[in-house]
Length: 290
Figure: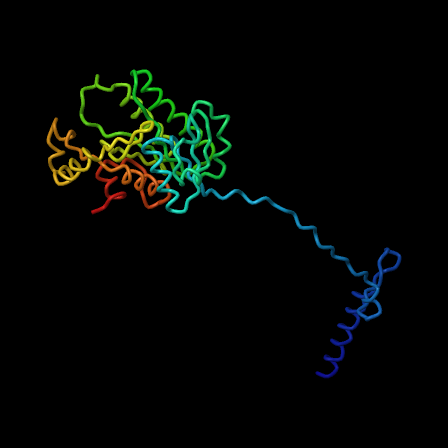
């Protein structure tokens, strides 16, 4: 009895398989076959390889742009960046300086005005950081324009072109009466505010006091360190005195121009240097630790 049931089940399976493999010709179908002859009739698909497409790689940002690189502080920033093996670009109103020192040949000099960014902003396409050493004295209106407006224009263009870090060399507040160098400090603080707004994660402000070193004016070298070095030596050991009301800020120690340059370049290339303001003590910590 069991054998007969198995035989009946096999017959049902066989008929079911025949019904699946046979399609009514009148319905437009074809019989399904698993024979090798039938399988060979299936056309082989030809797969063609796509032609490679050249996708231009984005420029790597490696250069440092120094604004005012032919000045007292700016020239030392250029030299410090070159000593670190960084490619340096400098924008100045007068272009290449007249000095014959060898480092000048290693800098790409661009002549232009910060107020005419259309002429130079394309140079920022491979710039990773900007260091601005632009500043000056004159009437209050002139000082606001040089220290404030010019730097604000540079900050805006750098942010627009995707520069990651911007270092601005500002000035310490000595607690002077508001009418003393009013335009100078108004310009400096306006530029600082713009930097904080445009570079909240990559803007670093350096506020040195008196910067000393050998300063070249025309064909003359002025040894500012003759005064600055002994004062720095004394005042660096009087840090608590800088907290004294009124007179404390006047005891801010001078700082060597090489220390300012080292701190500026470090702030430009090292993400470990946080955004914000570095006073003279922070500059000394980065540029001239002892």
